[in-house]
Image 1 (cartoon, rainbow, N blue to C red):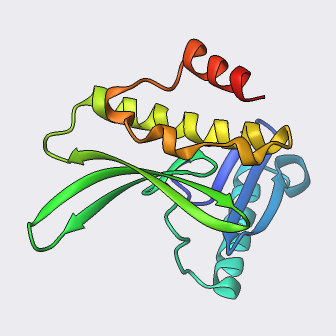
Image 2: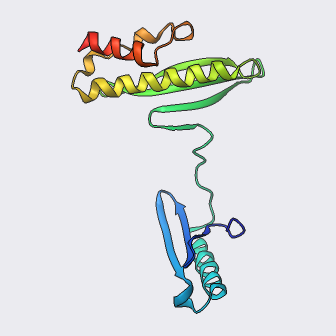
Image 3: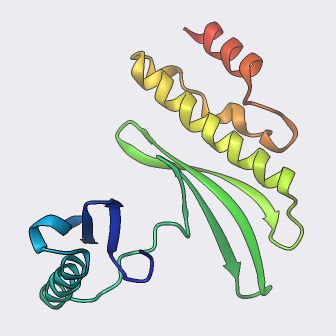
Length: 172
């Protein structure tokens, strides 16, 4: 039911209204049987949605998809340089060192020159960086995490079975 914003028909028995604002969900199910017909249930869902929208306001949520990769601690951004009027594609990996937030950036290059292979390599390297960080935290050996080994990331593959397992096996 993309025709009606925030209203879906998750099953043949009714409509679901779901609105999320500031990480709080406002949700209600409208059964066709309880409302007497499919049309009445839809009208009830529309009316309830409109009332909730008035109460919570019609402000837009922060767009997560523009920067997020869907993987915790790894983000994709396009940085604009006003002086050069150019855009650079960057993958960033966020992690903690001694309780302080750290960021490792994987600059792919100018957006107009980036190939799909370049972007995929940067993404997989950033994900591997984050997985390695989490691995060492989980086994209680966070002090063995070595972010500096990712310096030559553009010319070296860190992801994949051989490179990851060998490095972790040597350090534990």
